[in-house]
Image (cartoon, rainbow, N blue to C red; front, side, top):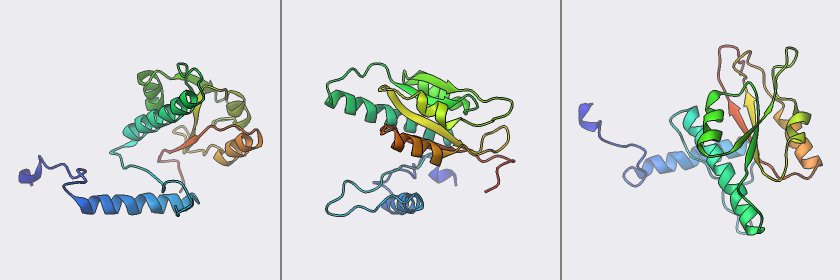
Length: 177
C-alpha cells in the first residue's frame, strides 16, 4: 500500500478508466434530473465533476455559478463586480466560506421557529440582476427537512428569472432517503 501513496488516482490522463467511470456517473446523475442527452443540434453534454467531499463541491459550485454569471454580464456589457447568492440561514458553514472566499455577497432567508427551511417566495423575491444562484438544502442539518426546490424552480420560471439552483444533499441521522 505504501508504494502507491504518491499516486493520484484522479489524474485522468494517468488512469483513463477513471475518466470513463466519471463520465458514466455524470450521465447517470443527469438522467436522474431529466437533463437531456446531447445530440448534433444540442449544446454540450451534461457536465460534472467528482469531489472529495461536500466542502470541495460547494466551493466548485459557488465558483462555477459566479463565473457563469460574470461571463453572461460581460457579454451583455454590464457591471459584474457585485455578485450575490441566496441561501437559508441554516446553510452549511462552507457556503458562507465560499461566498467570502470568492467575494460573493450573502443574502439570507432566515428560518423561523415554525419553518426550518428556506421560504421559496422569500428566496425568489431576493433575486436581482446580481444573483449568481440559490442554494437549496436537501436534508437540513437540524431536522432533515428538504427545501422545496421544485417550488423555487417554478417561481423562477413563472417570473422569467434566469438564476440557477444548487441543491445540496446533506445526509444526516434525520434524513430519510
